[in-house]
Length: 167
Ligand SMILES: CC(C)(COP(=O)(O)OP(=O)(O)OC[C@H]1O[C@@H](n2cnc3c(N)ncnc32)[C@H](O)[C@@H]1OP(=O)(O)O)[C@@H](O)C(=O)NCCC(=O)NCCS
Image 1 (tube, rainbow, N blue to C red):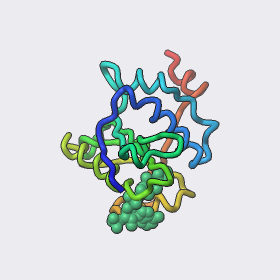
Image 2 (image 1 turned 45 degrees about the vertical axis):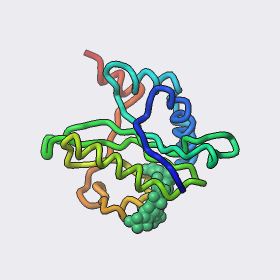
Image 3 (image 1 turned 90 degrees about the vertical axis):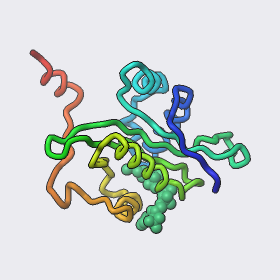
Image 4 (image 1 turned 60 degrees about the vertical axis):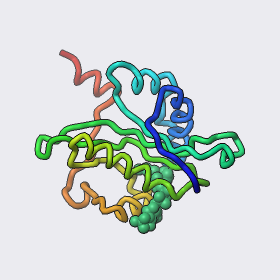
């Protein structure tokens, strides 16, 4: 399958919003998703972006029956390890079901971008039941930080975050 990968631009936010929804359906967490196209436009494409993205695109002749040519994406941002220094965090990786076979190229691009920026780690999370994606990551030489090192992914949000933020 012919495809190309390029940096995401503001005009991609409609398709990114569509695919984040598809990913959340796959992950059975649609009730958790509040992000809108406008949020993505503001947060990814203003002066100090909170994230970056890459888009996988197929030529017009391979567009889906709904007319989509943007068929996969990854979102990432830079982070920092006080042990290892620069790191890249991959927030999403998704390929539409009928175009599977290009996920490795998308993830490889995130790795390339990270290495070009001096990062020595690529971090991400995967749901425990998502065995096929876990196997995909393991096949690429990744390891399970929770299983191997005992780290748990923690979060504070909603009222707890508001309480915590009280001066
Ligand atoms: C995860 C995902 C992005 C992978 O994309 P993909 O197009 O299916 O992956 P590819 O076909 O490019 O994978 C190629 C490589 O992964 C390996 N691989 C892919 N799926 C695998 C599996 N289930 N088990 C073992 N290896 C697997 C292939 O053997 C191949 O490895 P090699 O080239 O080193 O031999 C895609 O399946 C997807 O979008 N899944 C649904 C959403 C999701 O779970 N996203 C991740 C959330 S954390």
